[in-house]
Image (cartoon, rainbow, N blue to C red):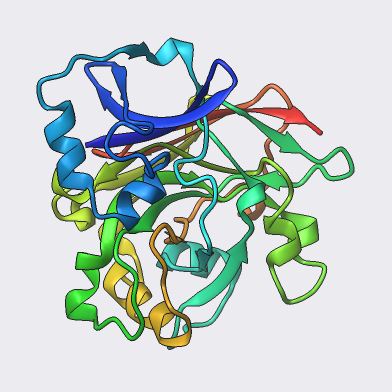
Length: 282
């Protein structure tokens, strides 16, 4: 299934994308289920599949405003330097453990929504990435069981204000400006993806390919990330792990290329979808 979170007629809802339309699931599977996270917490994915099996879409995609797939995750973990080409272009050394920083939920935005470039920085960069959403929480999750904890996959753009990212050795300030973390357009359940390592990932800026790789290129694969993160904190249902960006970021080009108002950026991951946003100035 492709699950979507949206706003329509002043209300937030969620549903299943089917035949280019949406079947609204808000409050229909269970009285207490008004979000994708609720659906995952109550383990009602199969019930949702049964509910939509014979139904046709009720809402056109054109009628809704896309919201982040999980608007309110308890935790968002972002993985840095997880592709060899990107690690090399930044001049960083090899490491034994993943580089991790965090995003705040209120820095996220949805598909087809504006990305806000701060008016005091011209170093607004793209980072196309695969995001996973946790469907079954836990602590000390072994690598050989880690994939069982994934609810689904989405595209993510870890929009980065590079000068603020480098104010100190910590990345957090440059990664948490409002409306810089697009997340979507859907949560694609794992049964539709198969082996994630076979998926291509590509980032385009105004139609030009800027990043291109395969998910098999991840230095620390998804099972390792889940195992490592769950060793220092308990993963909760709805938590998000953004798995890292390939080489080709604008900041490391000669000359550098940054996003500016009027630009359009796309993150395209095979079977997962295309996340598209346009740049405006805050």
